[in-house]
Image 1: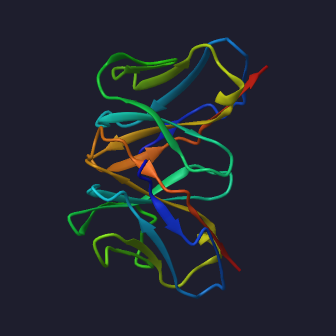
Image 2 (image 1 turned 45 degrees about the vertical axis):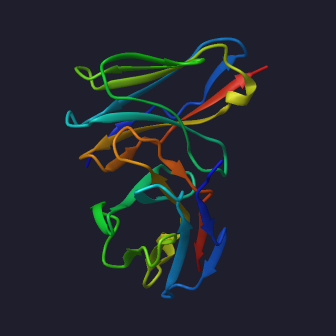
Image 3 (image 1 turned 180 degrees about the vertical axis):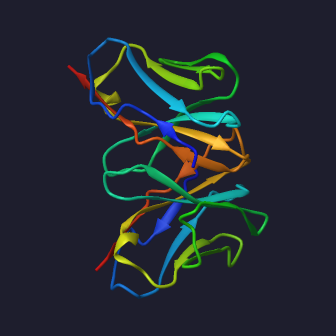
Length: 110
Length: 114
């Protein structure tokens, strides 16, 4: 069983702060790593993906990957109340099989 | 903007009955997926489908489950004999390619087995 671990939270940050979300995975053969946002009762929505070591930036979001430590993170700069949601880490294995973490609930307080 | 659609949005069934959940993926996408999410739990991969055959399936996807692409647009998940523990939200997703390609999720079908 491939494990994807996330702190369930809730993580509370004030509006305008940086939110840092973390994820670890068990299988070194994992190929690509995805961050999804899921609002309550809704389907997951892709924020970004990363597959090379280092940082990848997209607007207010930065994904960081460290394959040696089997660790991927998501930074959200200038957090807004509308960012309040559950953030899901997903790992692609064997080119076509995805494993999701349980998600971290983020609360951004106005 | 193109989107994945799913029907029905809600389905209530009796234990032991067969259900078919329907999905219409985005039209030029080639890879199709089913996931389920039991209330309060993680999203779980069920199956991926490419070129009219299953490419990967999880341990959850046992003989009670089957998938089909009966025509050029629909992608279905059939549960032959539902159990109480099949109650969950079922999401369909599609992507243009595998790996780094964005998966677009449908809104889900909430299945309740009584």
